[in-house]
Length: 298
Length: 321
Image 1 (cartoon, each protein chain N blue to C red):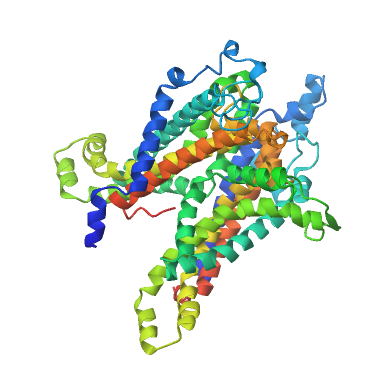
Image 2 (cartoon, each protein chain N blue to C red; image 1 turned 90 degrees about the vertical axis):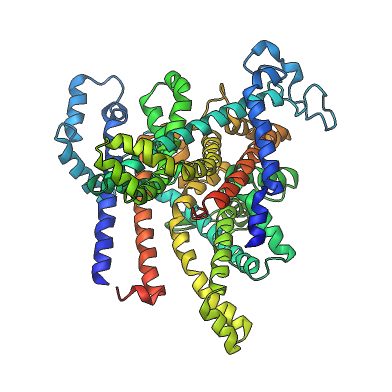
């Protein structure tokens, strides 16, 4: 036990590396338009002459294109930077949406108990037994049947965020509900009730700060899952369209060229995706062990 | 025991009704069923006649009742895309998915349990360390990326194994199997490894942590004190108890398995129900989507119930409650 507490003073090397990787990726994402050698959306910035050039470190590579070019002559570094940006934004959006929904419903269920609690938690039970990807695919299919192709283009990121979050809020709700039920029985909450504070204020100002730490841990772990789900959906063709590609869409496009020997078009974005998710997972695991050992690995 | 079973049964029926209600809403309100079934250039009178014939003019609750009746008799409507009954479409794709899922699960259990036990018994050996390190990478590696890499290595570069389809099938009447031909078996290798990998990670981690828990418990220490042989303690006393949660979790993971089967089938163009489903999402083929939802819901309910009942058989303490 003594060695354990010593080890915990400083995060392990793997966590620090993961943190550094994540930090660099976030900088790249924030400043993508400044860093990227070209703008993949600007047709005039690339030409077909440069198409299908292998990565610079390979034979036949071109130093201008570090990771090679795709079938349209676009620089893969630039394409991936913009794709990474979309993946991260949708991942963060889904986590934010799911966390907000889960925290609010969890607080309400835990605070009021009874019927409200029963209804919210039964809905959660049914939802959580369906895998996120399946629900998200269903929602995507319904959205396609209801909306025109053009509307679908503009709404794709929001549909994605919604369809990922609709299943993921359950984890937050369950944890927040359990902690809220503990807090409600404490003296400070009883005192707040006695002096007649409105329920909303008690939940927001007094209970919420006490349950936030576990929410942050779940959110970090969930971020990796959300990014993966988005990538999977886009890979299956039910996510971001090729005009605004996320990493998943890029891998989907690259998949078509696998058999022509142009492996880098698919493998490069896939490598970036795996590194991103691995970094988030390492940090999430560390936070879970550090702050809340009770949250079981799922 | 009987009371426990009947309560579980009632819960199962309620959940199925809820799923059926969602599927019904999809059938009825997503897109216009009449517009998708009527011939082109039909008059308003013809459309109205079809509406009445389909029972779409009746109260919604009556329609829902009829819908449940139809589903119970195995009528899941007609696919927009293939113009075939959805039930027969699903049934024709079922063998492909089942063969893939069964092979992958057996593979995952056969490799995952021994590795988990090894990591628990000899945490410092080279193989355990390697396994532990690989699992974190395994979890972070999305199924479709694993599939793509396997295709790249074994199908594109080495040309050892096929990358798509099921190979030659042998027709056994109702069941078309890929088990009985060489190309069928070769086609099965890459997809089943892809699908097994994510389960394997989970099973391994679970067996490892359960084994460590069980081994530190009093009855195992007592068994050591009695001088019972190590192999007997590990196998008969420890592993047996460590495996109980594996039954439940494997049961609960069926949802994930279905989700990953969808992805795997799409990557390898494996003609199962998952591929049917992803194609239906893109089309969009609403009756197939709704029928798939019903099918998956039914499967979940059944498997959860079976896992619960199995549990009462494995663990005698639950029987008396």
